[in-house]
Image 1: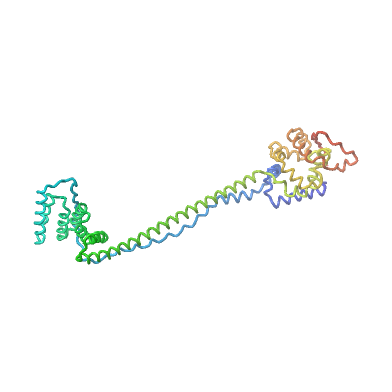
Image 2: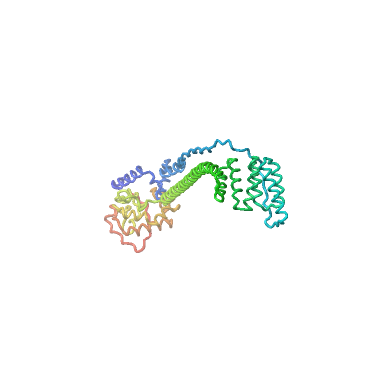
Length: 416
């Protein structure tokens, strides 16, 4: 009924589709899908699409959180056993006198008399009386630094360290070289446990005017101030190292986020490219290796009688009874990579006509042959084949038709 070589070619084609059903999703085989579905068959979904959908649903792997560094215990502050610490008195502020203030000679002399009285009272132990005289002296002449330093020393005997510090500060402002003001303020800081401030003032006072009575206290203060300074320096180093680690960790985190973002963009780009390739349709370069077996002897059974109706006489110069036997894969690749052919095979009108054209129904074929787009496509096929083919066996006794000068497709309702 059908030539064996054409049946074999069809069997090879079906075998290829069985091995790779995704080929049925090619735009070129849309008519075949429609025919299968019209018979109640189903087309298996694209595996690549299923994989993409599954892949897209999978949550992106999250980077494992880095273990948090355990906070290092802070170095405890060294507490010195010091029975000489005083309970702090209320802090006071002593205003520095106006530098433009002019003191008369009489007031200068009066202030010095009051200073001497205050010193005597201090030596006698009358500290309140001494403070009162110092106040009167400073009120008359507030520009003498020694008055503030002496009153501060009186406050120290009363264990009023903050009051002494306030007086010494004004005395140093009036006379930056007042050794007594520095030493008294250094001792006041020492009794408040402010070792670093005490070391600075005692060091400065000893540099201006060294005395043995202050040297031993100065040594003690320097030792304790050094321990405090070293502890603070260790803390600063740890804090700096921690800040650098945190900065490095943040940098790594940002780099990881950028890397994951780039990977995501690359995946999306690859998916888009794969989608574009699959959506382009057709078999790039034609069916692999051409149509199976090169469709020896033409389309199976010559698509009974060649293309429906047998294309009587074949396409110009041949192709009678279907496409010529043993069409090369190179030609089939050229055929199915031709833009015009691909565009025509995707044309909805032509796709709708192909099932009727291949049905073998004479009435349907007669209806199709007048369609201008289909006629143009047949003309394209004729030009590409260039007269290849041999006359069918049932017309071998007839002379071969002369090549047409201009191709016009003809149809026949004859069926082999």
